Length: 63
Image (cartoon, rainbow, N blue to C red; front, side, top):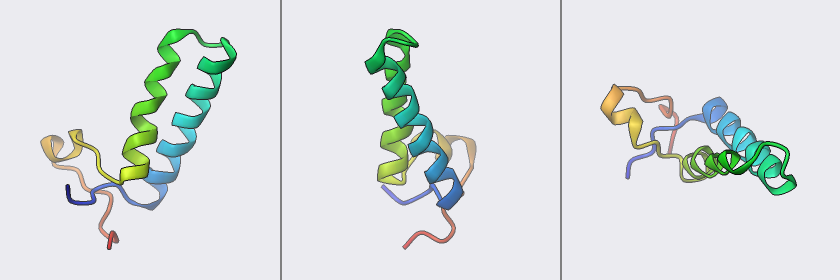
């Protein structure tokens, strides 16, 4: 897996993922909020499987 998620994209994914999971834990948003695990994982691993299919790469500065 080559890194394809960059700085701002990564931070936003992690924040959105944590917020959604927090809403799921508190019961505020219901069971569908557990989908927050997806952006959280893609932010932590710095790889989004949809990006190569769409020809997107925000991780130009990945090392």
